[in-house]
Length: 256
Image 1 (cartoon, one colour):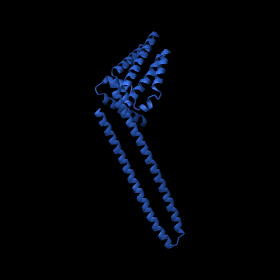
Image 2 (cartoon, helix red, strand yellow):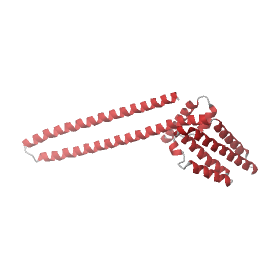
Image 3 (cartoon, one colour):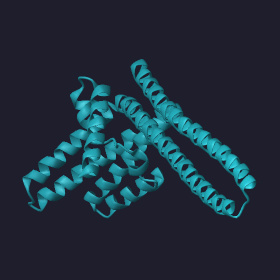
Image 4 (cartoon, one colour):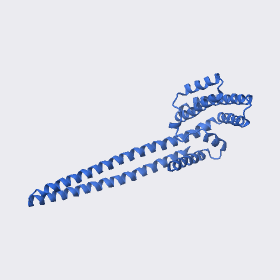
């Protein structure tokens, strides 16, 4: 249940960001809400774009148009993501995406014709008509698609990077705490060993040993307090870093 709530929060946050970036452009928002991923690293295919395109073309030759649609969609999504990460090659990616979108629309048209010949449901035909319009609109607004996708994906990648840093810092703190616990346990064992040794000592030696033990205990206490203060300050600094990162992202979005 908790995981589902967290996922919903992430989805709502992503939706809010995309709406903010698209403003009043409802058609562009509708298109991008179907194309962009909250975690592009995990969702975008790792297969080379050229290979994806070749596989989709083979499906066309085999007249497996629905499979071709899926493969072209994967290629389009990858091309959009690559365009956002290679701003210096924007013009090249505009041509690539437009070509892929056009091929996807044609594959969809073929799939629609096949369904109609087979007398399959009008609902499926209507859906495919909507997909054709989707890709035609993408071609028309390709520059806006890349612009908004760049802002969105760069924001998401920064969030993922910040998350990884937080997890690494949490891991470091956890290890430090475990080391501290081990140190306290070892110190306790040393105190117990000394206590047993004192029983065998003479009166004068025992008093001297007790003074040394008290001094050692005081030092251990001071070290523990210093470590706790360091931990509190590290956590505060982490919160400050996250706030600064958030402010920088907000400033960059406003500049765009």
